[in-house]
Image (cartoon, rainbow over all chains, first blue to last red; front, side):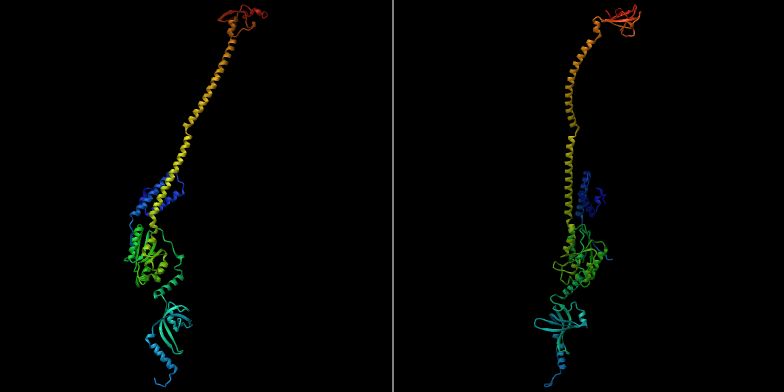
Length: 69
Length: 413
């Protein structure tokens, strides 16, 4: 983890994207980041949020039956 | 029966016994009353009286019957006693031979329910300390119900709307009838053991109390209580309560409500994301304006420290210095000029040529040395005489000595 780049965001699942989004929030709230890094974190956060939203928008409840063993 | 003949006691007692015990009206009666004089015998039989405000009747409950009862006589308790009226010949007493005991006011089912509830509660199955928290965002939601039940569709409708990213795994089971309890218990256990779900919903739509009875079954209640996975029970309508409600980690009033409860976290996600986005924007704006302020401050300081400004300052001080310098130079020029004039005058005064102009001459030997004394020359020396406008050569005729000053003094014109 922590190696998220802009490129692989579109392949993240909701849980990962959401967890990383929360990480970004934590990071910017805790650390005094240099400006360049701040802007990078901001952009990463926006992309992760958009990814989460897209996954929610496109999601369709899956229903399965538990197979009897 | 003849007119004058007296009965023996025994005969009469047996006569009474025959009448009483032969009367269909007195067999299989149900009597409501309060237990009194309750005496459990060492033999295991129970002796007591059933009474109300105005009367009482003796009762006996044999050991075998007592063992089959959910409740036992307790002084002061009310109960419905079912039994046969008999006549105890030996003591000449009328009594009810009890065949069953039931609590008053609630039906058989409720009595069972209460007894089981009390028993399981005493075991600690319903303790709050056993309750586990529900996962905030369950990705896999197990549902124990009948796939044909309206309740299942209710659950799906709620989850489609609130938790579309989740997956529902149905553990199908009958939900009513004699076969239902073990099936429901197995369905719960199968989901729990599958390790594939984050939470388990145990749901069934509304129905009569008999319809819901399977969810009061001890096997079902224990399966729910022993579940490692967090459970939510939603059985019947809001007013229905079953024992599985007590055993589950969370009790929901209906199947839909159970679905709402497990999807609570999911339902908040859009707002949470919007909140994070807002926080991000606010943060970056703050960060940028901070930087802007810092930049402006730095620019100001930089401008203050800029070379152009220094140059201007330097120029100013240079001007000042130059002014001073010029002034001083001017005055020192003056001074020098004056001094020079003085020196010139003195030089002028010391100019030997001026002396020549006054008629003196300088006599030098060929080596350039000035002739100052008589001894400086010998006869035959060639000397040079310098006068005001030039030089001419001379020769020494003779040198007689040093006594006559005037004789050799060439300078003596």
